[in-house]
Amino acid sequence: MAKNAETIWVNCLSIIKDIVEWQHFKTWFEPIKPLELKDNVLLIQVPSQFFFEYLEEHYVNLLAKTLKRELGKEARLEYRILVDSGNGNSRSGSMDVPASHMKTYNNNEMNFPLVIDNPVKNPFVIPGLKKMQIDPQLNPIYTFDAFVEGDCNRVARRAGKTVAEKPGNNSFNPLVIYGGVGLGKTHLAQAIGNEVKRQHPGKVVLYVSSEKFINQFQDHSRNNAINDFIHFYQLIDVLIIDDVQFFNRAERSQDAFFAIFNHLHQSGKQLVLTSDKAPKDLDGMQERLLSRFRWGLSADLQIPDYEVRIEILEKKMKNDGLEMPRDVVKYVAYNINTNVRELEGALISLLAQSSLNKKEIDVELAKKVLRNFVKTSSKEITIDAIQKMVCEYFDVSYDKLLHKTRKREIVQARQITMYLAKAFTKNSLKNIGEHFGGRDHTTVIHSCQTVKDLMDTDSFFRENVMELTQKVQLAAM
Image (cartoon, rainbow, N blue to C red; front, side, top):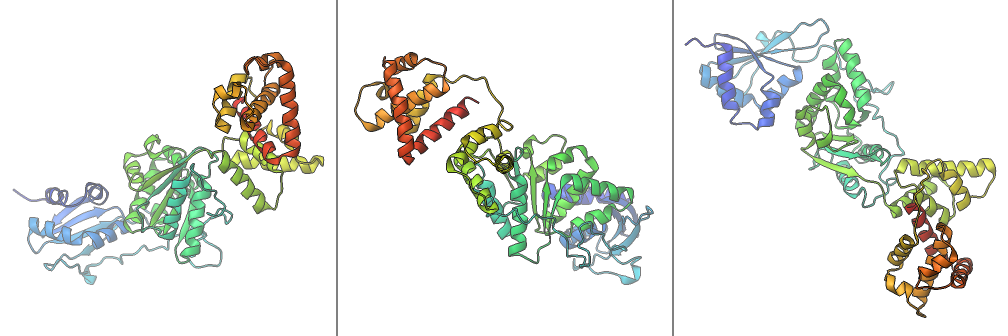
C-alpha cells in the first residue's frame, strides 16, 4: 500500500496521542496539517513561527522517533510555517531529524531565516524607551496595603500576594479573581502587578482590559498583522486581563487569547484574570479556554461585612487626610452594604456636601446624603424584631429581658430596647410597655429618658446604642 503524507501523519498521531497529555495533544498536534511526502521527507504545516519553535524545543525527539518508525532512519521533517506578512504568502523552512535524535539545521536548505521579518509592534510602548520597556498600564494607587483584608476576600488577597512574590512559579496559574461590581477585582489585580514590579523589576508586566484586548485584535486583523499581535503578548511575563467575561462576544479574539495563554503558561509566565462570574458560569466562552481557567485557582470577592466596611472607610480617610466623627463612619458603614465603590462614593459625597454647604459632618447630614445611595423601603420594623436584635447584641435571653431584675446589664438592655421601639415603630407607649411583661407607659418614658442621659455621659453606652440603632435602620431597609 502506497504511503502518503496523511497516512504517515495519522499513524504518527496515534503513537503521540498515547504518550502526551490530552490537553497538550489538542494544543500542539491537532493543528498540524500534513502536506506532502517525498523521498522520506514529510512536509507539515504549522500555524506560526512560535508553534515551530515550541515543537522544536519540547517535542523534537518524540517527532523523530515516531517518524523514523514510519519511514525509517533516513526520515526527515520539513515545516511550512505560516507567517503573516500581510500578503497572505507562506514560506517554508526545513529541519533534519538525525539518528541521534538531536536536531540540526541544514543552512543550505533553509529558504528563510526562522525569525519574523518585521519587528513586533508594541501597542503599550513608552515613548523613547526600548522595545521591552513596556508601559504596564498600572495605577500606582492600587496596592496591597490599600486593599483591606477580611473574610470576604482573604483567599483572593493572599493568593495574589503569593503570585506577586513568585510569578509563574506557584500553584495559582492562572489566578482567576471573580465577584460582583465594585468589590475590588481591578484593585487586587493591579496590586499584584504593582507588587511584581516592586519585587521583580526585570519582569515585564501588562494590565489590559478584555475590551482593549479585543479592539487591538480587531485592528491587527484588519491590517493583516495578527501574528504581530500574538507575538507581542507572548513577550509578557505577567499578563493581567480584566473582565474576561466580555470575551463571550468575540470568538476570534478567544482564539488569539488561547494561543497566548498556552504560550505563557507553558513558558512559566503568570496569568491573572478577573471576571464577574466564576469560570463555570461564564457563557459564550470556548470550553478549551474555560478548562484552562480551571488549571489554577479561582478566588471570589464577596460583599465586605460591617467591620471591614468601617476599616475601608477609615483607610480611605487616612490616605486622603480626611477626618470624620466615628459615629458617622459607623452610620455610613451600616447603611452602605452593597460594594466598596458605593461606600467610597458615599464618603466623597458626604465630604462634598459638608464643604459646599459649610455644615459640620454629623449623622443628620449623613442621613440626607445617603438618601441618594440607599433605596428607601416601606418595610416596617416590629418590637419583636428589635427585642431579638438587642438580645443577640448583648447575649441576653428573651425571657430575662421581660423579667423583673436589678442586674444592670439586663435593665440597660431592656431600656435600650424600649428606646429603639419608640424611635422606630408606630406603637404607642402603652403597647410598647405591654411587650415587656405588661409594664405601663411611665416605665417606657423613664427608660427612654435614662437612655438619653446615659448617652450624654457614657461614651461606651452611647457606642452600643449607636450600633444597635444602625442595625435597626439596616433591618428596615
